[in-house]
Length: 165
View 1 (cartoon, helix red, strand yellow):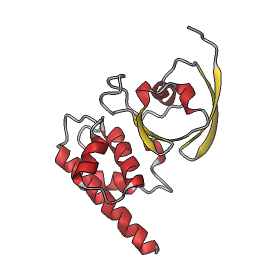
View 2 (tube, one colour):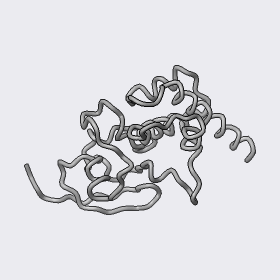
View 3 (cartoon, helix red, strand yellow):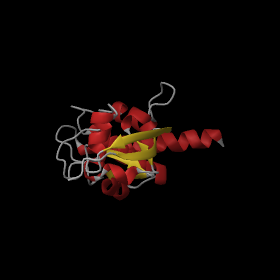
View 4 (cartoon, one colour):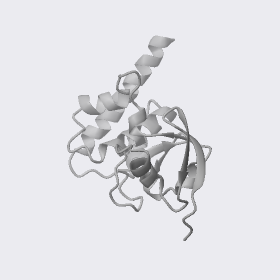
């Protein structure tokens, strides 16, 4: 296995980045160990639990199975990038408001999956939400609260968009 470093150029949470990584490191490893972004959780490291979900080029991906070189030239958003000017994202607000946060371990991944869904469709039906969150496991919070939070976030986003019009 080569230990040569490769240079990556990408946008992380709205900021251009250039870093050197080992080509066999995963995106999750780079985020946590090299960039100190620990909101992205590592759990299964097999892409099964969703705790490490981030948004890569507008799509939710499990960062534990994305090799770091795959992000070259891409736009990446992590849970840390959702707060803007000290304000929580509507998805984060809804998770808190609806009591969908328990231990918090899976929540960053859940929020990122929900965010990706709501960027594409801010009025999802129950089936859309279930499909978007199908790759995220939670052992603490009831899934109904999480579903309610995503629905509430969509409503908040729609209302904010209507107010801007």
